[in-house]
Image 1 (cartoon, each protein chain N blue to C red):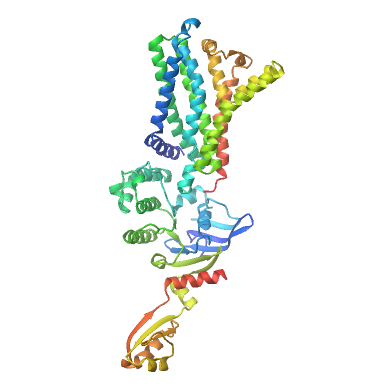
Image 2: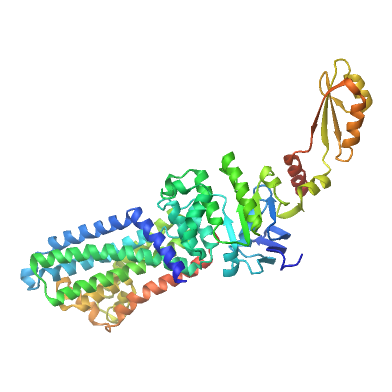
Length: 274
Length: 301
């Protein structure tokens, strides 16, 4: 089983490096992270924190948008593309289960994502450290940011596979992926914001809102990074919502999402007749 | 023939998509080393039958055993080679990388890859990306993956499409070699050509049913299609030739006769009696296309 998963993963990773997704994703991450780090360096003096802390807070906001986007762009073609080329049917006539095929692609895509996020955010963090100093706590925040951004990306990789399986064509999958990104990363928060304004500090705001926030992988990612560091919370001004939740809520949500989304993709894949 | 003897055994197979019956009452056995051509128009059900044997879709009723295993099971898949009709591999990989991936999926040692690429004539292009390959080269790569390991059953879907005559000749050699190694071959095609005529048996599908399943010779006998004999008469002798043999006048000097395979020799004897009244004799046996159209037409009625 391991040999077959690795065979798929090796081929897929090679494809990702050849079609320059690895390079472009890494450069994109790096440029955005560097820009945010130095554009957002103004408040260090007033808040009394080091530059890396500020950079981590800015990069958290960046990663919420960019990690899911990159993941979906890598993943949407995974099954639909093979179905269109006609290789899906051939590959599935080999003694390879559909789970092994998905898992192999997931490993390769996760490696691409980890490299892009690790290099991009890591390099920007290192630049901030050199320019404005860093303490053990801010270094810890950076490490947490990189690790959780990769997990966040993993959720969206798996959601991308589900979109790829369900739509059946490359173009349809791309559309569905953009839709997923909009709903989960942008519209979900706007909806919650609207509900908060409407509720005006009532029962919804106190009890339901924090849980709904944690249920979304992008918000769970934000909550975890903010709750993990008082200083990041101070800079990002997002401490309130996280305080009402038990510490395990956001990490649990963030780790459950990739697993559930992979199971969803696998269940949808079972119904595909290539 | 029992299930155990045949590499591929299909009995009472039917497939419905909703209300549409795509396949019905299919029974077909292929013995190890046997080459069977599966013919039929587009939409006759060939591809559905292949998908069922591969386990990519499930039958509505009936049974299929691939080397004694249920289709789609790990054992059946390990025993089956498949060459799809339109195969397009990922253009970023090289031929060698693609074939290595397939070898690893099949559990075959990676060192078998280079000899296979050599076998199908791709060794010089092995390290070029598949994006630069011609259609014929992609087809050869597809053939190479079908040759991985020792498969019990091979399903080739339109293997000659996109191949030039020399490549086609190589394909015959590969098919014969697989058969000699004991692989049962099912070769799907939408016409009866030289390749299918070189197989041991011909199965013809029309409208989801098997309308013929026999050797080419037996099919030709059963169809009893006439042989055409065309005589060129000596100048002025055409009327005399027609008067003694019958048949139809084609133009000033030619007479055309139709006869069955059994009557052929007797007819020739009668022609030779006419001596120098006949300048030339041309015999046209029923063509493969005539035969194919005969059975397909029968199935469609």
